[in-house]
Amino acid sequence: MIRLIPSLPAAYVIARGVWPLPWPPALKLGLAAVLLVASQYHLWSRLSSGSVFAPEFPRPVVILFNGAFGAIALAAAMLLALDVAALASLVLPGGGWAISTPWRYAVALTAALLAAFAVWQAVRVPPLKDVAVAIADLPPGFDGYTILHLTDLHISRLFPAAWARAVVARANGLGVDLIVVTGDFIDGSLAARRADVEPLRALRVRDGVWAVPGNHEYFFDHDAWMRHLAGLGVHVLANAHTVLARGGDTLVLAGVTDRSAPATGHPGPDLDAALAGAPTIAPIVLLDHQPANAARAAARGVALQLSGHTHGGMIRGLDRLVARGNAGFVSGAYRVGAMLLYVSNGTALWPGFALRLGRPSELTRITLRTSP
Image 1 (cartoon, rainbow, N blue to C red):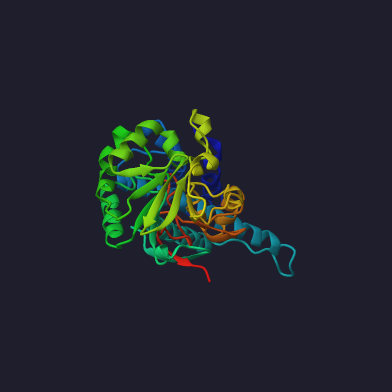
Image 2 (cartoon, rainbow, N blue to C red; image 1 turned 120 degrees about the vertical axis):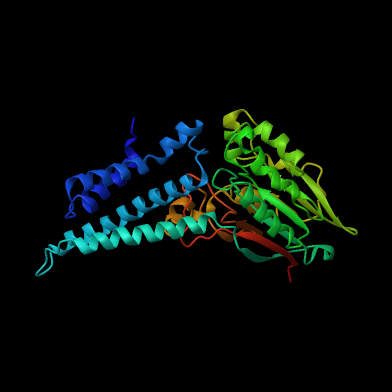
């Protein structure tokens, strides 16, 4: 059964962009059918794997579906803007402007080019972004300490082993002190993704690779994935902490589970449990997949929280809507009380909507500095 909501933008594009064109009816009907099929991308994903979160098509097909899905959404928005302008012209002197065929062609071309660029921005190996973070009372031994923040890898058919190897090679080449991953490693079952995540085993860094689960891990047999990631050398902080040392100086690295965990019968985020027994004088760096609980972490004395989940909002403008579902946090640095929250745009993103415009992916190298 065709789902209604994803078909609405396609139906609008057909009615306002395709059907008025001076083409033979058979050609317009054929294009309309293609648009309706593309609009049902998530239905085809569910049929291919049993989940909308893990399309199991060949990578070029996933890329084409994302491009077509994005072009439909962008074309619908542009056609709606033109229709609003045409209606507004009716009240103006000499008004009654009609959308001409060249305008419809321009919309189609612009939407296709923007969608292609947005998909390319989404699937590339991300560029490096440097962020300096000043922390009050940071021990001298950690002044200049570097953390590579990865998040939302979403290793899948869209982000397969070759992509993961390229990310690992770039990460290893940065020479940072610590690598952290704030969840959403995968989209797919362990059986489907085992080879694709294997490159993570090659991550090499002095103080290790530490991580927390994201909401997508709970969609695909969380327990099996946590065991497998541990076997790859990833240390998972599930409501737990570790103490990093530089000479006689210490820094607490803590992690909590995801807010979605209780829905699958797993323990929810518990910051008190994560910090139980931690040194009271050491600054705390917290890993939390979702940024919404930042105020609670700040009240608990956390100095720096690293999060992902939002993908930066993916498209500038759309990010405002994403922020509303994440306590106002969507991309970049925020001061929350005495704490700094950094929300990464993500290393990758969900293959069901792989589009980026104005919100690029990133490998985030964070350098800790002593606050004046």
